[in-house]
Image (tube, rainbow, N blue to C red; front, top):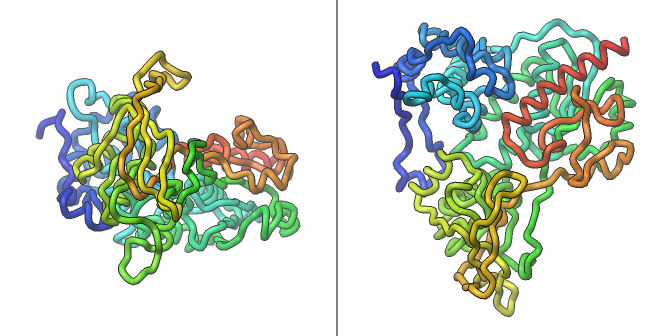
Length: 459
């Protein structure tokens, strides 16, 4: 065994997978997982743990796999995370836990994410219940939003013996995990399995319930809930405020991915209008832009990602960029749209782009794009997808003015996740704006500790 070279992961052929919605990565089989786990040095002071937002004891679960005990690995993971099968698929491990693996100094880091996926999938496929809650403590907590932050809060409080109900506005739990991430990266069956584990242990999910509209926070309190967690995400899309954004054929990435994922635009037999299927431009360079582009490709379009910086500044995961290129997605760097053009009936026909050059770094540390005025040019497109990020939706805070927010509508919280209203806690994208799944989970875990401390202080 080569200590410094990771075991490769099998994947679908790019020219086949760009025409279907089956999972791209096959993950490790048993022999591959054990071989990869044995590369771990079991460091006395594991830096990888410091890079994990939910503080998974990485050497412990990896050691169990190396010892041919995948059940033990799954049980170890369950102590720290409610969504291991999700994290193993969509977390940016390369910039978190794997970044700090000492093996990365001379070769490849241990493939922590793929090993987490293997252990979680083993537990699911063998019907192993990994969560072991304490007896009921008689206290009720409400969670608003069944995304990664809300599911994490529910799981953490369940372990402590709380009676938890999750209120979700859409028809199925999962939040961004089901409406925002494509099937080929995160199958709905994986998310449903994680949710079902919580249901089996007593967590209640009330779907099609829009807190702030069909139910108020006061009504929740009247039902005996002692604390409320807001994990409503960031579902308010950003646009560029350029001419033509209201023409037919212009989507936010949120709308595009939600129509595809929840309305089954990818399945034969579903009449879900979504895309012209000819030439599509995706504006942006993050993971959502890669998802939207790869979905559009699978729906039959010729797809180009338009990004105002260079490839070196792309914020998307390197793995997602690599997969997009393999699947035939084109990239147009150092350009930015200035206008979207349409025919007399209001349907998109082309887009005007302006070349950019990089100037001094901005507040993010990336070099600021500077427009080259007078060098605009047109490209033919029939669909434009804006993947520029999202802000928290002000639905709840707008009807509850006592909950303080910042200028971007993010809920202001204390170190314990508590808002300006003492029984209301918050975390994830509802606080920070659009971020990663694992950061939302970390915030949820932290808020659950804050809720537990708050309720104990009142009793």
